Amino acid sequence: MKNKYVLIILASTILGILIGNMIRDYNRRDSIFTDKGNLAKKEVKLITKNIKELRREREVLEEELSELKDKYEDVEKIKEVNTLKRDLSYTDVEGSGISLSIDAQNEEIGNIANFVDYNKILVNIVNELKLNGAEFISINGQRINQYSPIVLAGSHINVNLVPIAPPYEIKCVGDKEKLSKYIKKGSVYLKSIQDNYPIKVGSKVLDTIVINKMNVPNKLKYIEGE
Image 1 (cartoon, helix red, strand yellow):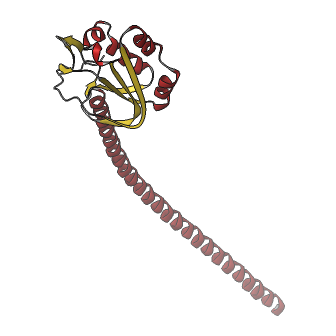
Image 2: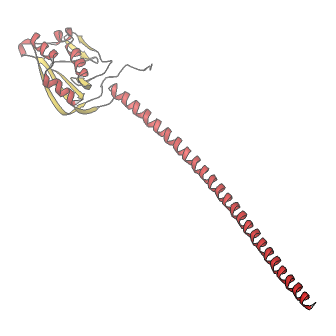
Image 3: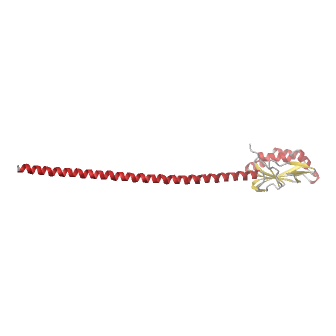
């Protein structure tokens, strides 16, 4: 009987120990799950905060990008206006190019304006220079653009309504290589006018040429785009 009682006490003790261990394990696991849940909540909060910060940064960057685009568009518009002003001869230009001189062969020939104008010699030379790399051209200091008249007025030629007299000095700025080839290989047209008329043509290749802006008011007020 005594042994049976001892066994019951021993079994109860062991069972108590086992139950205690189970309870501790359960509490530990519950604590682990609770810790993991809290950690997950913290991570969610941190991620949410980071997302909000990233959104704010994106909004700031988008605003900066919009400002930069506006500035870029303004710069492009300014470039377009400056290019237009340059092409219409409202600004001075400088660069490499060539200079041509058209004059009478000698003083006995006298005024060459009549046959120069009648045969459109200056107009033809200007057109030929454009085909051979000239971008900006002047005749006796008068800047040439697409609206420049070159016409005879009495005994002299007018360029941009301004009278000019021989020798006719034509300066052009543009593609130096093409213009140099034009001079070196020899222009058929320049040769022909020297063969057929009492005029001489001189030429020089220059590293620096300054062509001043048009010095008379341009009557063009509006430019209509297509």
